[in-house]
Length: 234
Image (cartoon, rainbow, N blue to C red):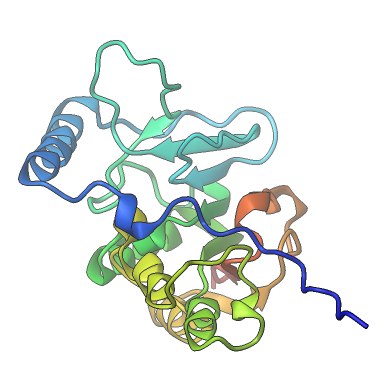
């Protein structure tokens, strides 16, 4: 009697070995865009419309209705890509009043920043959120990638397979320009040290503010989801 084969999990088609390498030219272009944007394009966020004033930080191509969708400076005069509602460099102070936003959503952004820059932008987020506002954050879950590397817990629950186990660690630490790694412990500690309260791990599209549950389905199985609140004014 033949045993049934386990379900096939697709191998990742976006191997770390096939990605373009970082070049001095690419770094220069990025830093030039930052300099140009900070000097000529830096603005306050758009004024609130009717309803809650939410912020999506690092929107990429995923624009959400009801949010100020913020991302890095677009410096080209003509671009086919939709421009963010608010252009920012997350490594720099945000041009935004204190206590401005009713909630924050950021997805797979912190890992693109060096630890000191991530600490900076999280501190800025606390400043610009209103007292009692919820911050919802998701990042690649370090534990899942390590479990996949060790071959444990069904490859950490990740929805794809790499041909070599070391690829999981390379994907976590290097793919897409990743510069920091996060798990529940260090993200909780950092948020608490900054001043956030009621910090807890939550599930995909589950949390305290239904308006912030806009997690991208493609990142569901590889992500750590965390929420925290800005303390109420004393």
